[in-house]
Image (cartoon, rainbow, N blue to C red; front, side, top):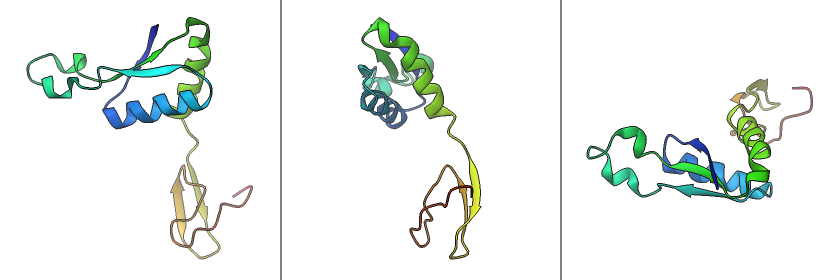
Length: 102
């Protein structure tokens, strides 16, 4: 087992671990319950961590996590007139999907 990353909070750690597992990487969240110790322990020791169980999957896990953390940011105009920004591929106003090349 090898530590892949430290997450800023439990929600992000869980999302990252779930995304890795969906890609076939055996990953788990450690230190998930240390949030209650903040103030008693140094803050960097209370953050949740993502661990990869199989050393052979570590490089792939690093690449997948990097891609997850650096998703493309877009700015496109939906047919309904709404300006959609960020990593969204669906309009939050009308629900239409982004057209290719937008």
